[in-house]
Structures are given as structure tokens and as C-alpha cells.
Image 1 (cartoon, one colour):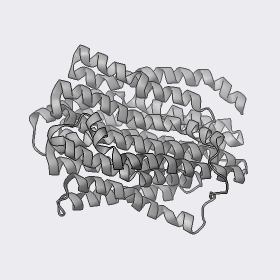
Image 2 (spheres, rainbow, N blue to C red):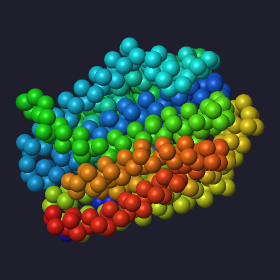
Image 3 (spheres, helix red, strand yellow):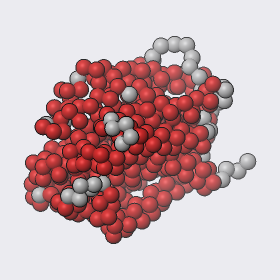
Image 4 (tube, rainbow, N blue to C red):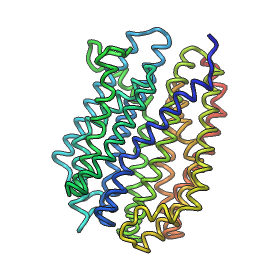
Length: 439
């Protein structure tokens, strides 16, 4: 039967965008309820601790996306044994990585909190949030793994249900734990930690009823296959971890430029940005099973059209979003300004209008690495992700903040994304001929 590229794209991407948007609301819900319950100090503590969540989430996506890519390619070729080995090795990698995060939560939470720059009134709140997030790392990473494999196993609707169910439970539990129960920031992070557990429960029928096409097989962790999984998923790791690195760098600069109020304002902007990036990630994750399948089948037309649909959707979304935020930046900032702090309101609104200029470029930079990886070429994707996540953004932030102060801090993100998008576009154009020769 002749494939309907747009119908398949619409089905996979719409479900994954909804799911990833819901998943990103883990942190946005915390931002809102913490701002209402604990004010500026709570927002500052959340923003100092949240990069650790990015590292956990990024590691889970790296293994899930990398393993899911290999699983889908092998499945499309009828290589069931190789597909199951990809799942088995991915699951073992999750155990290894999650154990490291868990141990860090047990023994290193105070040290990490101090390294992140927390002090005074926000230190204990930051340490509490960070420690609980680390202790729930096995749940976060296990959920990422199963979501990616369920999606690649032809059940994007169930994956969406898991993500939305977990996120809605987080919103509800946030309110219950912070206000009726009076549990403060511990209640907020406990609600966030329980969300992936609930998501896994929603996904469990796919495994219990044996509807899944993947299963563990005998054999230990194979270094060669594990390396391929990590290499294929590296762009997803860098995309997520770059958010954490950027937040750490920006927090340090803002503490010196505008104090805890500047950090709190950035917390509002950064957590809204996480939702937008989650939409781009949802588009990318929806594309990945399709492109991997088309690549495995040698369907170059399918891969090209899927990428084109994804880029068009990302750019349209970014344009509409920026127009809305440009007009309504102040009211949006006010939602998270429970104390009515005029300085927080001003910094957040001005920062939003500058920071979100970079979102159209960020959409390109999130999608292209997943496209390359899905075609079995992770190296270009890793280069793009490293450029935007580390190589350009850090010196750009220091340089522009030195030249233009607070305005320069906000402009560092769009400047980095724009330069990276130009480089990524050139890499895609130059690599097109090489890609066609692999089909």
C-alpha cells in the first residue's frame, strides 16, 4: 500500500507534541505553584536546582531515543533479534545511569547545591528540590526509555496518554501537597517525582498484555552496541543538558548583575522556554520513528518529506508564539509574580521579548540533529547540539553580558541559536548528497 506521508506525520507528531508539552508542564506547574506558595525565594531555589532535572531527563532521552532508533531500523528490516538486543542494552544503560544519579542524591546533594550557587535563604529549599529529583532518577529515566520504545513500537497514542497522565497528576499533586498539606517545596518536588511513576503505570498494559514487539533477551551489556545507542542518542542528551548548562551559566551571571530577583525572573523565562523546546522535541520525537523506518526501507522521498513537514510546523509555531509573547509578555510574567514585585515584572517581561527571538532558530537546531540521527548519521547531529549547547552559548553569554549588561544576557540565546542554525543548514545541504548515496 502506498504510504501517506503527511497522515503518518500528523498522527505521530500531534500525539508526541501533546505528550511532550504535558511532560514539560512538570516543571512549569512547579514554577507556578512555588511562585504562589513561596514567592521570589522559592522561584530562585527552583531555578538553581532545575538544571539537575535537565541532566536526568537528557540522559533518559539519550538512551531512549538512541535505543529506539536502532530498534525501529532493525524492526523495519525484520531483524527482530537485533531489535530486542537494542532494547536490552538500552534498559541496562538506564540502570547504570540512574544508579549514579540516585547515589548522588544520597551523598552529594549539599555539595551540588553549593556548587550551583545557592546560599542564604534559598540554600535549604534548593537542596531539598535537588535531592528528591535525584532520588527519583530511576523513575524519570525508566519512563523515558519505555515511552521511546512504545512510540517506536507503533503505539504513539499510548505514549501520549502516559505523558499527559503523568503531567496532569503532577499538577493536581502540586496543589494538594503545597497548599492543603502545607509541604512547601518538598511537596512540589514530590509531586514531580511521582509523575513518571504514574506515567509508567499507564504504559504498563502494553507490556503486561504482551502487546509490545520488544522484550529483553539474554546476554550482558555489549560495549559496541551500547556505544552506538549512546552515540545515536547523544544529540537528545546535548539538547536537554544544554538547557541545564545555560541555566547554570545564566544564573551565575544574573546573580552578579541583578541578584536573586534576576534569577527568579530568568526562572520564569527559562521554564517557559522549556515548554517551547518540549514542543520542538515532540515534533522531533514524532519524526524519529517515521524517518528511521523510511531510512530502513530505503525510502528517500519519505525521509525528505517528513523533515520538510517538521521544519514547517516548528517555524510556524515559533512565529505565532513570539507574536503572542511580544504582545502579552507583561501579563504572562505577572502570572508567576505572586508578590507583585515590580522589578521582577519588568525584568521578566523585557527578557521574554528578547530571549524568545531565538525560538525559530532553536526549532531548526532541535529537529536537524534528530533527522541526522534517525538516518544513522549521529555525528552531524552531535556537532549541532554541542555548538548550541556549549561551544557558542557560554562565551556568547559572558561576552554580551559584559558589553550590554542584562540586555546582553537575554540576547545571548537568540544570537547563539541563529549562528548555529546557519551552520546546521549548511551541514544539511552539504550532507544531502552523502545521505542519498547511503540509500
